[in-house]
Length: 104
Image (tube, rainbow, N blue to C red):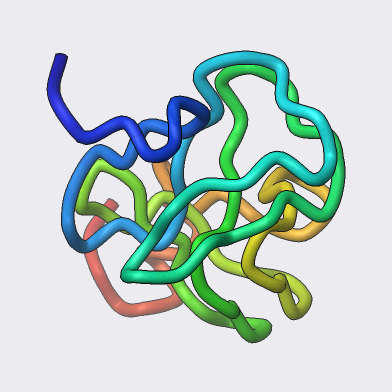
């Protein structure tokens, strides 16, 4: 398997990632080790969903697979579920490329 399993609860795919992927349905309070500390889940997180490892501010990149996959639309604390309520996808966004002057 590519990546590293943290605390038997989250898959950290690349060193640059600021989120992990839940490898099971996780309950609030579950802990995972990261960067010499423990990150406690603030809420239940479904299998396959993302959990923040570090604080993210509005506009910060959400990095998974070593690539930006989204942008925080509100502050996200370590241990919080990262999903459509607090993150907007940036993948396949031709409208964003046009705003940035890139060719989609």
